[in-house]
Length: 240
Image (tube, rainbow, N blue to C red; front, top):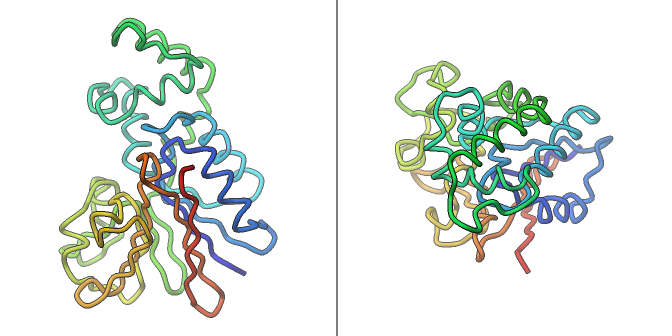
């Protein structure tokens, strides 16, 4: 059985669909793990969430929560819209609305109207994103969206904020875990000046970053394949 790991789809449905076909995903033989950030910035967040829900329901695909998924939930639970809007939430709203309501500039009332319609028509999407787990682990790997706080003795007890948002404190410091940590959130271009998967070495040993910055014009969607014998293989879908 292969383990296939994808992160930070960010509304890039076409790339996500192409990746599943390229890797020849077979739910009978493969374990698919998604590390969060299904929404925002890309054009097709609604389609991505619909697909992820279907994969989780039909095949038991493991879908974790990302910080953008959490921002969206906060907005729909009336815990604040501004941070979501400023981080690509408008693109998500438009994907659900089915049209560009920004043609004449941002309109707060129209945004609230769109939110109301989305909550009415897609309550299962909000519920799904709200209840996603923060981590998954197997015999050799820990899978999280953002990373592990090295100052916490038991990483499972770290804050939700760390699971969803941590960056430099995680990847710039040695890990105390025996298992390799596979994460997204931080685009790999910032880790080794490449959109390809980052395999940490030296003090970064034990970490694998897979966020290829798919929503950027120069970005790509990455998939980490882990074979039964522990060998790694990279798969890439670049924007055309």
